[in-house]
Figure 1 (tube, rainbow, N blue to C red):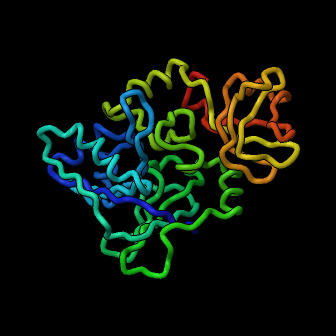
Figure 2: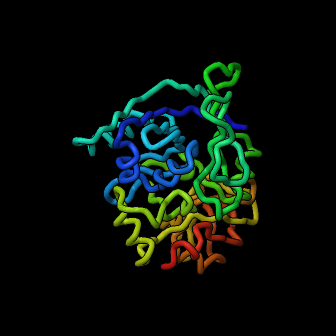
Length: 288
């Protein structure tokens, strides 16, 4: 298990559910109906770019606890506060009750493995009982659990597994200002609930073909590096960049037109790419 440093944002009040439902890409209402339950989602700008991501836990429609990437707590709170007018909602950065977050791999589930009064809580990736696949999920450890560091560098084994399963990591493969539809995040975006910030851009890109890059897995003839990818016919203009590598395999963003020219793809170190697999899926983004 890899331990992460996270910021914690508590959202409470009579209007908490309605407010969050109109801000984030995920379905807080569905989670609240199954409380205690958790899920994952994104806060976007009006142009559809990422502000933050969150894994959340709800005990009901008036109380939500959001686990945010370390260092993004104030930015996320301020972005949400900008839209508060007369809502009965309180946004509060808190120290706990969870001190550490661990991330590991397993099957997605719509359940939380234990009530909020237990020693720890497993919050899995999404409220999606009809979708079973491998994904990272968070284990929230309470304050009294001691002896574990807040930050631990990812191992080569973890990188290899992420490459094998095609799983992007925040701060490595994507971050603030990334466009979520370029990544395999259909489970974190509800296409059936009401409006949220950035929804118009997401809907347009989904149904009208405005996505020009895709997160992909590549195979090469030799060791890859976290660096740009080029076409033989465009040696000075990168068509993508690898952000996670494990020997001769890697993950990264690649422009769509390069998918049809695999035989020309290479890195400056001389390694040639021999196979490219899009990971975002035509079943979700029909325009591709």
